[in-house]
Image (tube, rainbow, N blue to C red; front, side):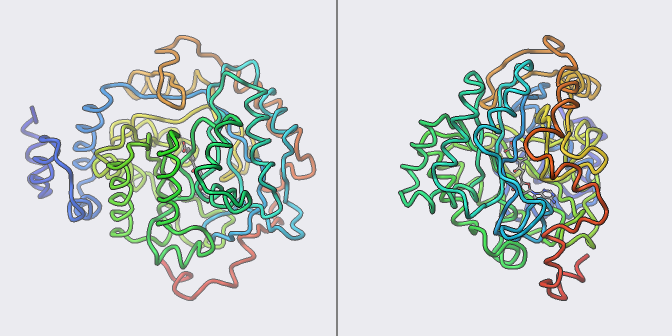
Length: 422
Ligand code: V47
């Protein structure tokens, strides 16, 4: 039963109709989405999202022992929001991991009972079709008991191009090589305007959805993301959710939506102020309310920070992602590749937030509960391995002030509107 105090707050915010729909489990419409973004009553939005969150996932918050591998930073897409990529031609930061190096990276964490290897990279035009199959095989052979979750729909688009085969056959080959699921990246904001302004050479939303649908029909589960806090406008984000839930009605193939809080550092748009924690919480909450057919909403601690992620567990999120170990797409400049939370950190963070921690695998099968199996091994190993091995010559490169990323070099391509934004 809704307490008097919440009823009053809901009424003052003018959100009674949405509240009724939430209580009855009815789908919210496009205009509801706009209202949820526009109301100043963020706590009420969070309260409503929490109703859905607890209905779907009770008091549980999921976490995963995972390892991220970014197999190449070479990318020919030139997205203005990204600092990770290196130019295909003559960029000193460029690297590609061989299948042997991928296997070595996986074996480095052999002492941690990892259940998910999350492997993504840039769109590197030089890589042949076999390379993608080989790195999946290498990861799987090095760790047969872990799920390999790899390749965003943007990479899949490139892989299909290199394969010169129908997408269904490509998914079949990838599955045979050991692919278990696909992550949610590359969806950005499903708007033709933002696509044209920030990532024009990447697949558009129709293609992203087509490839996700083909994955689902091939029996592969995937995630989806929303990249927010740059030049997008509110109706574009609501439209994004509407498109995703329409496909989900059809395929039921999405597991999780991850709102990604944009980090401007060292991108071509670094003059734009990044989203605040308050905006991060709203994105989580609106996603939870609009995506009534998505089982899970994830707060990605690397982008949202651990404290905001704890609060997000009361604003719609039921998953904090994982141990990560190493991450390059956005970096903490003081730590370079190493970005890790130990299993103990994750579990304590969830308990401190008042939720019950459950370790899951990528398909949300339960691995352990509460404080079972937690320790700090992830940190020790990440200290040892994150910054050595594959690309010695590139280590620390992002921490040096003089390094200009490929994205920063693209500033000359910016239109006055993009420079003025916010
Ligand atoms: O596709 C790029 C985004 C994505 C920046 O599926 C940036 O479980 C913020 O998709 N600031 C990759 N974001 C990450 C991703 C992901 C992460 C965690 C879990 C899962 C999952 C997926 O990162 C890219 C792009 O949308 N990105 N640059 C940036 N500067």
